Image (cartoon, rainbow, N blue to C red; front, side):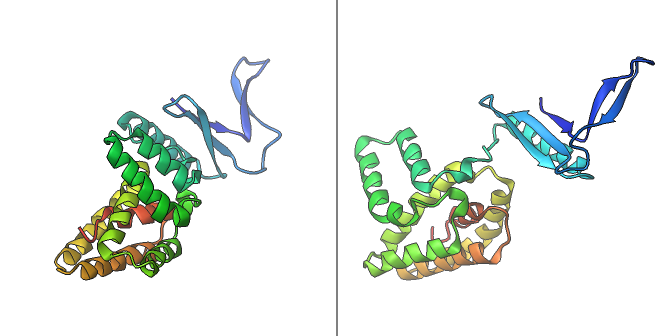
Length: 225
């Protein structure tokens, strides 16, 4: 079980009365006041700090962390710093595909995805990256259906990393309604245009603390399914 440390005060025992009293520390009035300490499911110690008068925010954060751990939905807060390529390669290695499917997906990712998105941290993916990537595939003459297949691979990889975030679940519900409209489009070009329209609306029109969560929220919607 985690706990919250008040870095501005420490508890000591009064020598005269034998009672516990609070004394100011050397950090009093400096920097963040409350430090939430906890262990992740792997046993690593982690912490997050909150400013003065934000005790409730610290309490709420600790409760959410402990709940996520119990539900098995905890996500490493540093995971977004991993590059897309690094995470995708780990993901591919862990899948139970037959070897021919694994090799085919690896070739597609290496040829069409990694050169454009592979070096970006998961948390740094932005609408510009997605638009540029799609434009490059279009310039190379790749068909809408093939580009959609590339998006599906990216979707699956991002799902594995981000699908448990509350913000993503909200985005998925929001864009599932939009996706139903795009499913009615018959031509492959129309389906792709609808998918990209939904993608850009999701990425550009919604404020969120996590850009990669926006990417996933869009791709999870499967607008061209």
